Length: 119
Image (tube, rainbow, N blue to C red; front, side, top):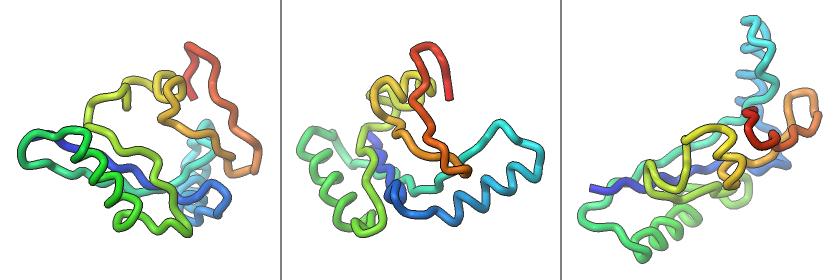
């Protein structure tokens, strides 16, 4: 049975108090290489039967109408689990646009890493 993954994140322009709290805790634990954390939601929808473009489109509609609050959240991706390069590596995710640019806890812009480097 195929699984479709929906990822939802707070809008980039909004504060993420949970993410800031986790980032602060990482710093207190001596994990200084991690400068920013944003916390979102991940939904895994199991499809009974074959999944095609129509099913994926239906999940996209659900993601926008039910799984996210469009005022404060963005649907980042809707994809089949284990497909489309998701999770292959950080560099691969940046290269195909699966990871968005953001700012770290100091407010500094975080650039997309060059090819071959990870963030």
